[in-house]
Structures are given as structure tokens and as C-alpha cells.
Length: 128
Image (tube, rainbow, N blue to C red; front, side, top):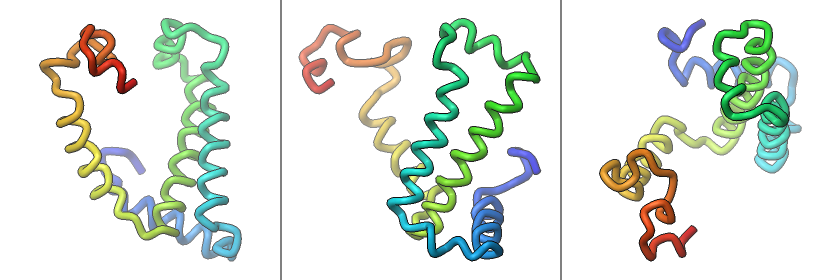
């Protein structure tokens, strides 16, 4: 499998089959899956907790450190897909809708090279 050749539906099917083969549907209430997702995201953060932003950018070339980071990312994705399966949410559609909203909310002309309205010095900073 690779990102270039695998679609989201295939990943969802793989997670659904994994869960079904173990009869784990009984444990996969949305609450439990959301909690598991947050826990796995926290485990991913642990890899970056005590290093600088600059150091975190150097991991790209460090295969030894990338393997466990990739495993945590896969755990996050697995629980996200399981949650989408449980709630019957079309992730591609939800993603497209959210990106449309983000494009409208954060126009490139105003936000290029900036992270928030306070960076622009306008009244919208109060929304943050």
C-alpha cells in the first residue's frame, strides 16, 4: 500500500474487516473511539514534546525516528477511520466541505505567511 495508490475507501474497508474479525464492534462506541483517537494523538505528540520546532523538521531524514512516528500516525488514522465507519461519516465529503469553509475563513491574500488575525493587527483578533 502507498498513499499514491490507495484510496480512503480501501483503508476504511481494511479497518472494518480488522474490527469485525475480532468482534470488536461491541467496544467501538463513538465515545470510546474518540477517546482512543485522542490517546493515540497524544502518543504521537510525545515524539515531539521536548524537541524544538527546528529539530522536529530534521526528523524527515531520520528513518530510525520516523518509523515509530509513522506507527503512531497510523494508529491515529485507524481510530479516525473506525470512528467514521461507526458514525457513517463520509470523510472525503467532510474534508471537502471543511476545506471550502477554511478557504473562505482564511483568504490566502490575508493569511499568507501569517497564522491569525492578531498578526494583521485588526479587530478580528478578538475572535481568537
